[in-house]
Each structure stands twice: as structure tokens, then as C-alpha cells.
Length: 475
Ligand code: BG6
Image: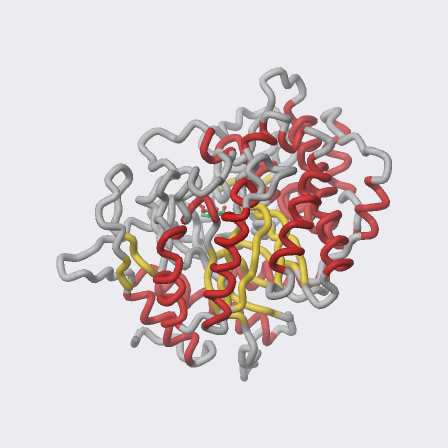
């Protein structure tokens, strides 16, 4: 579809950017915070730990001021569960509550809309010991946490996200360090999809509670959605593409929106003797809960071809965006039409438009982009500059596709790329940088932690100031 005239971005479009608690805050055991899974997990060799991260906990005022300088209308951040409830349930930590009160108020001071992720890969360690998401009680723990958040912050926060990238925890969580599986597990697929089921129920309970307690607020899921393409037009590849979309994408949203398991995924789980056990009441809760919008993270598309299950598929290096295959269902292949980032992720802005169109076509709910961006080896020059033209190109091409999707009739609420400020990557350390704001630290040397504005900072400021109309190179 070629539009002669593109529709403008809505005037209240939520331009901003994202972070997550454990990746930016630091202060990992300060002011009463309990340890989380991120503090106890084994780190990938050669990567920074999370004790200081980029010290957002102590420098949030300076960081929010920089976001305000860029003209942010929104800031998406997550709340560390174990900062607020050190044991995960029970006793509330007043200092933790206070920190997020201050952070929210600081955003509001500049008319920046706080968008809160309730869970971003950081289960409290105390709940890990009780089995984490394997435990059928986990949905009740999450509901208790949700209640604390709604009670304390619901007077000011209008946008809530339930669980960040639940699909990535399920599909590659063990590889990227976001999910732990009990040692005694015999049927790995069953174990992982049972954890996934508990998360789906937890999400449904939180959505229902939000609507009961905060009728003016809006809440939605936040998976990582990458539309799967077939590699060519062999009919078998179309079947593989449908399998991939169901397993990677639609499972999570079909449940959030329609309260039912996707039939292709259910058949896949049956074949692996891995269908999840429903506790009494789960089916009703899942059916009753409804999101107000769909938040999603998009980095690239995903190309697959048929797999007959007999070939060896080596997925040891898989992560959120690379080399994800399911023998017998689909095999991921490189898309020869696409370039890659320095970290091997394909770059596909048109796939972003295709993903938005597919999402809206399927669910007819407004969409909020909660991550998108390029991880790169940025360099701080001697005169305190960071020239990151590759980031400007990446963002420009993706933002242009949002406008095309809007012109296609897709309802878009906002754009919050990854990340507002440099932070520690899930499994590749601080050397893989995403931010508009550079932080002076290395993997193991904290240096000054001083903040610097990258070129992309000035460019994004201009984009926001023109409500997405001027995407040119000048800044
Ligand atoms: C998403 C996560 O998977 O992508 C973020 O929600 C993460 O936490 C981001 O940092 C980029 O991935 P990575 O692995 O490069 O840090």
C-alpha cells in the first residue's frame, strides 16, 4: 500500500524511551532492597554485574532532567519487585516505595507520563527459593505485588505493563539469564510452559485488579513481537511460518486478549506431553481479564522454513532475535535481504510496519511500542561527544514505518525505544549500548559514571519537537 499523503502522528503521541530496573538502577542491596534473581544468577563471562549498573537509583533526577531536555512525553521504566517487597510478599519496604514515588513525581514535574512495567526479568530471590514461576502460588504473589503498586502509585500512573517479554523468558530465558528451571526437571518443555501458564494467570489477575482498583488506568501485556516470514513460497514454509508466529507471538496475545490457548501451540504442547495443568479457577480468570492496549517490543523480523525434525539444530547461541528454531515445526534462517547490527541482529524497519499491521488486524487494540533500538559499540571521543549515526538511521527508518502504519489505519499510542540511557544488556554487558545518553563506565571499571549527550540525543529531541515530522539528518 503506497500512501500519497501520510497521516501525521497523533498530537498526544507518547514519545519517550525505556529502561528496566535491574539494568539501570544499581543500589542492588541498598535501602532495604532484597536480592532478585538478577543479583543471584550466574553472569555471562566478561560482563558487568548489576550492583551499580548505571546508578540511576542515585542519579534519577539528573537522568529525568536529560529526558525532559529531549522533550520526552513518556518514560517507561520497571519497578523492582524486591525493592518494594524485599521478600516478594509480606513486608513492604518504605524506602523502596519512596524511591518510586520520587521517580514518578520527578517525571510528572516535567509532564512526562510514567509508563510502568510491573515485572522485567527480576523475580525476588526469596520467591526463587519457593520455586519462582514454577510454583502455582506465583500468580497470587504477583497479584499481591500488583495491589501494592496500584495502592501506592495508582493515583498518578495511568499506563501499566504487566510482564516484559514473557515470550522471551519462555523461549530463550535460560540462554539469556531471565528464567531458571529446577534441576530435577525431566520434561523441560512441560516445565517451561507450566511456568508460562502461571505467568499468564498472574497477568490476568493483575489486569482484573487494575480495572477494579483503578478504573481510569490502562493496562496491557508487553511481549517481544517479531513477525515471522516464510523463507520463499514453498507451501511447507508457510506452515512453518504459521507455527513460528503461533509459538513465538500469538500464544501470548491470544491468551491476553481472548483468554484462550492458541490451537497450534496447544497441539505442539500435546505432542510434547507438555500441556500445562490448570488450577481450579484459572480458565475463568484467563477468560475474564482484558487488556486496554497491546505494548510490544520490536527489534527485527524473523524468517523461517520447514523443519522435518530430523536435522540437527544447534540453538546454543540463540537469544531474543537470533537463531530460534523448533525442530519439526520451523527452522530459523538468515534473511538475505537484511543487514545486521554489530551484534548480529537483523535490521528490518519494513518488518516493523508489517508487525504493527498484523497485530492490529488480529487484536484491534491500540499499540504502544515499548522497545526498539540498536545495540552498538559506541565511542566517547576526547571532546565528550558520541557520534552514533547508525542509531539515527535505525531509529529514523523505524519511526518512518510507524507513520506508514498509522496511515494504514493502525492505532498507535506511542514510541518508547530502547533505551533512554545506556544500561547493562541482558547477557552482553555494558559494551552493547542502546541509549540516547552515554554513561561513562566500562564492563568492570565504573569510571566517572558521568552522562554525555550522544548525537542521537539531539536528533531525537528534534524529532519529538516536530512530532515526528522532521526525521532528517540535521539536529
Ligand atoms: C529486550 C529486553 O529483550 O531487549 C531488554 O526487554 C533488553 O531487557 C533488550 O536489554 C535488548 O536486549 P539485549 O540482550 O541486547 O540487552
